[in-house]
View 1: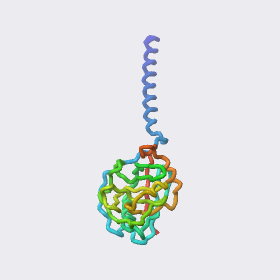
View 2: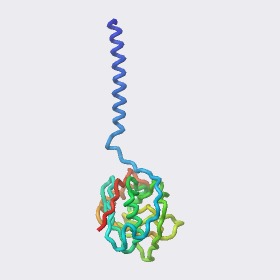
View 3: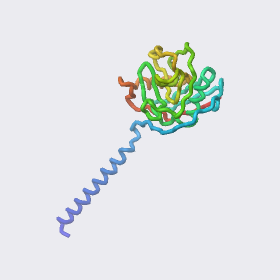
View 4: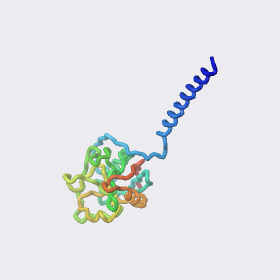
Length: 215
């Protein structure tokens, strides 16, 4: 082969190697651990839990929420809201909340999550009702259950909100309460600052793991 032919062959081989390197680098780019974790969606329908099937009235129980922004702990109010607390514990024990995101964040008001569709209209396939007393209020740190305007007061599925500011003082007593945040309120407050003008999160906030602890 002539020197010119050798040079052409080497040039072709070099071009091929360059393409391979580019492909490899592009492929690795998709594995960048710095990419924000996205919430998952689930198509899960659960049976309604029997009252007291997971936590009984007056039993000490907590739910630890491990999120992409840090951890916080909810003390379930099994004494005053046994039906709602039991349902929340049941969903946690089933792993329902794992991977779901906070789809609605309103600064100085609430952060809302627990929707398996991420659309704001999903649920676990059942609902329970625990009618709130007329004097029910929602101070900062309260964990209450979201519902539609058409549903009866105290109706809850899986969607919940955590009160982050005084804006919730205007809420009417229509929402059942699961408990209150007793550890990691600084994390909740930080998440509460990640809402845009459209009430959508400005970055994904995901519940990586929810764990029920009793006693």
